Image (cartoon, rainbow, N blue to C red; front, side):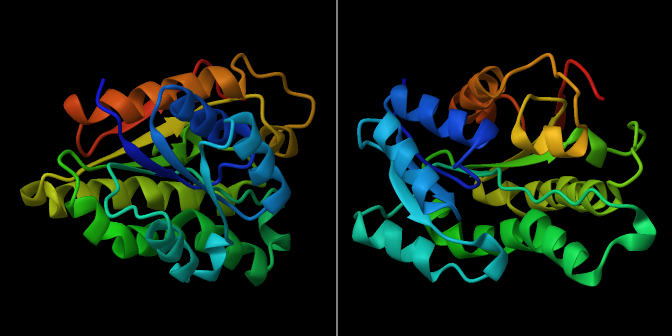
Length: 233
């Protein structure tokens, strides 16, 4: 198996945490980004210190800290970028504030967009670069939609379209771009969106699939929006 250098956002909890940990256990060099320093340190400890952590709020849309982390650890290329970080807004449409809407789009759309721009030179140095955007089945046209999730689902929908656009734009540069639209997973975010709902998949189980996709997905897919769901609440 080829050892990869993999950067993943939103790695302090849920699917992101499990994916980062499992990728590290597979021997890959993992750079984990999240806002919560304490949770990142727990992730680092769980990996026996192998994971490189970077505490950073992606919603600032400034990525100097990310680039400095790579430089300080002598990392000059990225094989896989996993845009996993997400911000949930669960509120009735007429009550959603501009700050809630902007916050959701900053984290779910603008941050991945600008982070890809910032990391493009490092991705181009990889032999088989792969960008994986983590969306939601709620962000796919024709899927079941739920009241209160207009900001979240529409922002995740924008991420799916961005995936298709970048796959076309980067096809001559050998950069693969795909999107995993996740269904229900037992995470803190799901419990906020659907209190009391028990999903059929754990974060570790979904993390196992994302880990496989990070290792192998570039061989089979490009520009694809792939639903990964046993159920939709």
